[in-house]
Image: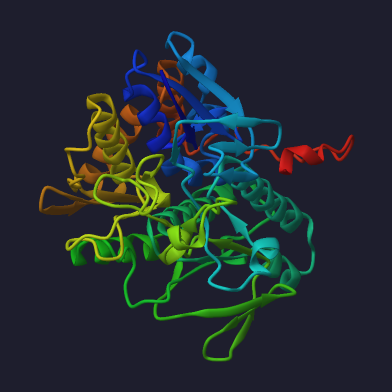
Length: 421
C-alpha cells in the first residue's frame, strides 16, 4: 500500500484526504495546527463577530471514523525528495507520494519590516491577534482625554482592496457607525477613522464592474475612506509613506494586499515559480518530479491559456484540484486533466450588503447577502459550528450586540518557543 503524505489541511488538503481511497493508500496529513479552519470568515474573528471555535474543526474528530488516515502535527522543516522524507518540528516521515497543499501566506512585496509592524487576517492566530489590537485601541481611546491622541489611537488603515480588505474595512465601518455609540459612550464616531487603500483603480479587481461599484458605495455608506490608485512604500514608527512621498500616521495597519505560496524548505529552486507557487502540469504534478510530487490549491501554479498567471488563490480551485487529483490517483493513472469551473465570487460589505457574480449574473444588496450567508454557512464543518454561527449572525443582525468583544491577552510565561518552530 502506497503512503501519501499531504502537507496542509486547508480546503485542498482536507478534500484530498477525504476523497482518496483508503483501501489503496495510507494517508498522512501534516499541519502545524490540529484543526481545519474556514478562511473566508477570518475577518469576522478580527471584528469580534465570531470566535475561532465557530469556524474551526479538529482533524482528529474529522478522521476518527476514516480508515488509514492519520494526522501529524508539525511545521515542515525540510523535504528530501531523494530520500522521500519530510522532516517536521518533531519527526521525520517517509512517503511514496508527497502532495503539497500548504496554501499561501502574506506577500509584503519586498517590504520585509511589514511582517513585524502590521496586523493580518490570513490565519486564525493572526485574526485573533488583530481582534485584540482593535479592542485595545478602542479601550485606550475611551480613556484618552487628549482628543488628538485619541484620534491617533483610533486610526485604522486597511491595505488591499480584494475581498478580505473590503470585508474587514466594512466590519470596522459597522463598528464605527453602530457600535461606538452603544458600547463606547466616551467616544464619538468622528474620533475613529478607517481608510482602505488599493493600488489599482478598482476594488475587487476579479469581480464585475457592477460589483466593484456597489462595494465602493457600500463602504462609503459605512464611513470608510476609500483611496484608489494609492500605493504604500513603507511603514515606520506608525507613519505610512505612500508612493507620492506623503506620510500619514496610522496606529493600526491591517495588511490584506496580497499572498504568496507558503515556503517549502528543501524544494528544488526550479520547481518554484511566480509568487512562490510550485509549478505543476495539468494533472497537478510538479514539473520534473511527476512520479512522487504533486501540489494543489493556493500553493500550486498551473498556467493555462485561460489562467496564464495561475488559478485564483481561492477555495473553489483548491477544492476542485483536490477532487481531480484524488480521482486520478484512485484510478491509478493520470487521465483527467484539471479544468477549473468558475462558480462565481462574492464579498460582503456589512449588514444587508454584499456583492456577487454567479453564473454570468452580477447583483448586490440584501439578496446577495442572503446567498453569501447560505453558502458560507453550508461550507463550515460540523453541525454544532453551523448552529453557533447561525445564532451569532441572527443575534448580531437583530441587535448589533455581541458578548464576543473580549480582549484576551496571552500570558507571557512559561515560554513555549516550539509553537513557532
